[in-house]
Structures are given as C-alpha cells and as structure tokens.
Image (cartoon, rainbow, N blue to C red; front, side, top):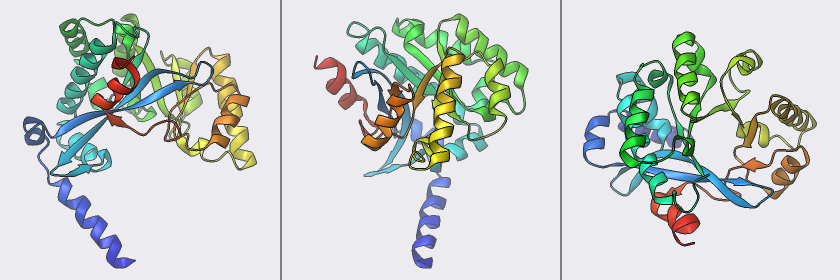
Length: 264
C-alpha cells in the first residue's frame, strides 16, 4: 500500500511541473461535456463543460492542473479557452435546440478580474449565439475575499440573460447566508449528498435542500447520480434535473454533439 501511495504522489508531482501556456499552445487541452437531464421529459437540457489535458495517450485530471493554474495565474487563459470552445459548441446546436444551456465553471480569479463579462460578450458576438445558452457555475469560495466585485460581475451576467449556478452547494461555508443574497437561478446539489441517500440524515438533508430551492424559485440540479435508487429518490422530493454516470460520463465534444444533437 505504501509503495502504491508513493507512486500516486510521484505521478501527481510530475504534472504539477507542467507548463499551462505551453500545453495550450500545443493543443493539449480539450473540453468534455457531461449531459444534464430533465427527469420529467427524459430529454437533455444541456451539459457541463469540463476541461481535460492530454499528455501522450494519458488524460490528466483537472485535480492535477487546476490548482497549478490558479497558483501561477494561468487559470484565466484556461477559462478563456473553455469559454470560446463552449460558445463554438453552442453555435453548432443553436438551430436544433436553442434552449439548451452549456455550463462553464468559472474561478474566483476570473470573477474578480474585472474582465470576465467583457470577454464573454466578445466570444458570444464572435460566434453569434444568444447569451441565454450559457450558464456560469461558481462555488461559494468565490465570495470569501472580494464579495463586492464578484457580486457586480454576477449581476452584469444576469443582465445579459446568462444563467448563474451555485456549484457544490452545502459543502463549504455559510451557504444559507450566501443563498439569499446571490443573483443566481440554479443550485447544484453536490454528489456527496446524493451519495448519502441510503442514510436517513442524508435523505432529510436532500429533501430540505429541494424544498428550500423551490421556495426560492431556483432550479435544482443534482450531481453525481450513479444508481437508479438515487434517481427515484430525487424524483420523489421534486429534484427533476440531474447529471451523473447513471446517464452519461463526460464525453468529448464530437461524441456529445453527434449523440445528442447533430444526429437528430
């Protein structure tokens, strides 16, 4: 076991030395998509865009390169890449499903940069897509430091009709205090809560998150759905939007478009 652990640490350290800008220039980054489903209509309502990096024949997890990108400041360049790729994907499906939303994870670095809205406007105009096809996903940690600047950024995004989702809800800081003030329209229930439905306390927490979200007129999307039992419980408490391996793992853009849109 000790030998295995050392090997994992060694592999992780190897990728921590990677040059993000060099990898971008070498086209080593690629956007994957994990579909999101409406459990009532049984149709896809969009997808979450997830960044991957390919070194040779091996895909590197974002857990390995995102912390590095945030530390050295290249996270903005990575997210610029994702924003443009997602806008280009929206262009490909606009005539088939204008109401689909593609979600982009945005770091607090970008929210605080003061340039995020301007960059999104640029890429939306470049690819000639409606703003409402985009959704920005943020985490609660984005509000720890520069709350005023982040709030202004989110309000500007909302004025453009861009959706805003609070990701990993309930796993970090003062969730309820944040929830009542944020200009958001969607709450994403973290997979740790979905995974806990076999326990009474887990079911109670999920049920009350769903009740609270509906009372605040927010969309609720459950992440990490892997089993039918989880799906059935979510339906009983009124959570009718979900994503997870039960439906589909994150897949490459070409497969996502061909499977769900272009082949129609």
